[in-house]
Image (cartoon, rainbow, N blue to C red; front, side, top):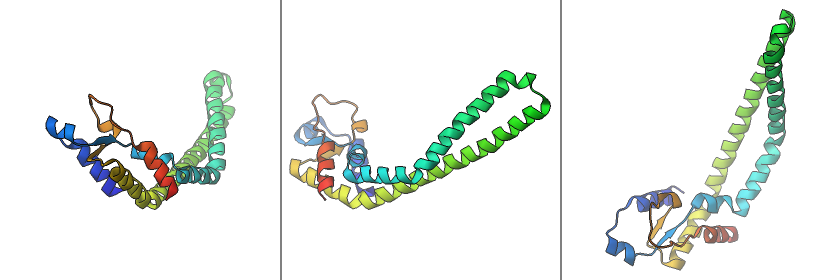
Amino acid sequence: MRKLIAVLGVSAAMILPIQAASAAEVAVLDWRAALMNTQSAQSSLSQLESEIGAKQNEAQSLGNELQSIQERLQNQGDSMGESQRESLVAELQQKGTRFQQLRQEVLEAQQRSEQAFLEQSEAKLEQAVDQVIERHSIDILVEPQGVLHSSMDLPNLTDEVTEIFNTL
């Protein structure tokens, strides 16, 4: 992956004379999209969803409760008794703490899952990209975000990389 990112970054940053650019085979690859459209990525996302789904649901429910309590305090806070208002504020703080804890746990699980997937997929992605480069005799491969202007349509190899990745 590091090799691929370095190659893409260097390729996008290169400034070529017009003659060399017209003689070179240039193509576009959105490697993130290619990777995220793979069967492996979909499987990884499904596994992650099953792991964190309950926490996400709890966080969403708590978020709704927090919003309801905040609205109640804003709309009725002045007319409430002090003990009732203090009780709601304490509930808001308690649920807010749990909400933040759940969000952090979900975020950490997502990051761990993404990192594991990228590490597991790196070699296969490089292999798929190498096959596509060889198949199309590509001299320069750039990311879509790296193309500021092109007077011609550049071949987009993203779907082909995904297809090859799925066969590896």
